[in-house]
Amino acid sequence: MPTFTIGEHDFMLDGQPHRILSGALHYFRVHPDQWADRIRKARQMGLNTIETYIPWNAHAPSPEVFENSGVLDLGRFLDLVAAEGMQAIVRPGPYICAEWDNGGLPAWLFSTGATEIRADEPVYMAAVSTYFEQLAPILVPRQVQFGGPIILIQIENEYGAYGDDSGYLEKLVKINREIGLTVPFTTVDQPQDDMLENGSLPGLHRTGSFGSRAAERLDTLRRHQPTGPLMCSEFWVGWFDHWGAHHHTTSVEESAKELEELLGRGASVNIYMFHGGTNFGFSNGANDKGVYQPLVTSYDYDAPLDEAGNPTSKYWAFRSVLARYADLDDRDVPALPAPAPALTIPLSSMVPLWNLIDRAANWVTSDGGPPVTDEIGHYSGFSLYRTRIDAAGTAVLGIEEVRDRAQVFLNRQGVGTLSRDHHERALALPFGASGTLEILVEDQGRVNYGHRLGEKKGLIGEVTINGEAILDWDLLPLDLNNIGEVAAHLGGQSPERPVALAGPAFAYATFDRTEVSDLFLDTSGWGKGVVWINGFCLGRYWSRGPQHTLYVPGPVVRAHGNEIIILELHGSTAPVVSFVPAANLGHTDF
Image (cartoon, rainbow, N blue to C red; front, side, top):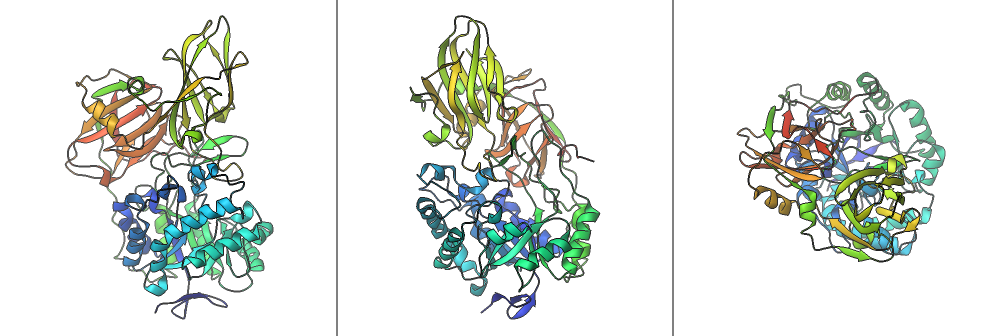
């Protein structure tokens, strides 16, 4: 029976010293038909292990549902890791950060009556227990002792940066053990004394998270983990991007030098990220340290394997370093990528968002002010608020707080936008404003780090006209998880090519591709919105940048009858869809 343990000085695989050479690869950020390719390229770079988080909120969109098929088929992903002859490190959270919406915690969790999260609180812990019981059939039989790939399980995630509730960590350990997980458990924290102390327990193997000053930080880690192997389980080789900022890159030479320093000290490593992937749909997280900053759709992370799965210069530099610690065959390397095809397709039809809204029947009414979207079980994407107003003269709309971006319309005419990141809370309406006031609110991603986890979305607090509260509201959740109804409506329209794209509106186009391949959708001529191809949501785009292309996985594309749907919130003078040969993730800081 295979074994994996933590010895006095080393990790021990089947009784022999073993160095973990791991790379982070999130199955939920990669099309499942591309998992095997990405895993193989990790092995070809010299890695022997794949690490992944598990996003609780993706698997459990509601308390009654646990999904594990398609892009969420964790069992299949782990089986592919094993088929490539590699091991796996699994980080089930329950909190994962990962720049993922709400740090992986389900939004519904905050409506269960729990008074605290990430703490030994009964209601929260009961939900966590259920989650781990749902994971058990996937994880337990895939542990190394049963012939599976799993060698390590991480408890929580950088908990020392959040809290110091040792009772909570002890109960997490107990839950993990009770469902049948018997491989060694680890924790990870940034190499600061307080974080390393607060984020772990005696009996859990401490690891570090850092991307520079490896020798110094390993020394700090060693003070808190006096025995056993040293490991940087998040070796940051890039970084993530926010809308309106620059695209982050790191020096190939410096990253390779730090990797060499780390391995030269005898440490194990998990490269974060080996392959970042994409925040498809509405899955991106956000940060808020005084200014709200939502993440872009691409999670390229300047990783060795780029967003489309192609080796970068960092891949080859790391491979040269890893070749000194792994048995590599120079004939077994990834093929060089070819440029993606370039093509331009005219839009064939367009329908204003209002046309579809007027057919909707699932409005919710309130006479106590605007409800937050969480109250009606709507946890991401878009919502529309509606009320009647009648102002005799000057009219100023006031909103206590917008989460996260609100487009304001009076009688279906655009008035302006209020944005959380700009701390905007007031907007002048036309003189003598009267009629139907509609506010289209976009949840741009829930905060994934710190004490703002679990914030409600929508219009928060009072909404006023000239200081007088508006109490009567209708609220419509826009369910865009299934775009089929919109596609049917658009596809059934008589072809009439629009001369421009005036939002908020859905637009439609079709195209054929005899040679199916990855594509890069050029969004540089559009304003702000979301794109679907064949029902698969590629994610958000925004002229603010830095990102100006959306990655289209090849498995999404078919030979004939590809359908593109665009939700454009503002407008574009170019009524076409263009694909370009390569990604454009924006300007860098050097």
